[in-house]
Image (tube, rainbow, N blue to C red; front, side, top):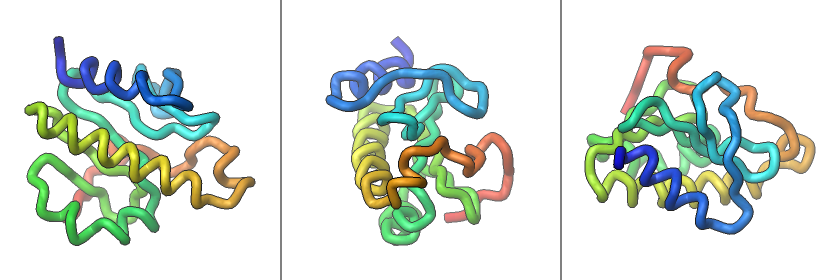
Length: 126
């Protein structure tokens, strides 16, 4: 089984999450309500929508992981899924993303993500 599928199956056991089609066109994504939380690019990569405020809060820890890529100005983080530990990291980031969505104002939390995912840009930072 590929890592993305394994990670998606693990996330689908969480209450309040559902599967859908990602706004960037990849399939599948995992969402809470109308908010896309994570979507997969191929068998070994996932984008997690942490939001810019959550990335700013977690940046000291995130920048030290070789499994992560961050695009400057984006609320998305890309996770390379090579090992079981990477899947554990992804699930931790999904938990943080759920906290970030819960902190959004109601009018923002109820709308779709307008921040383009990492596939729409190439400038990554750490």
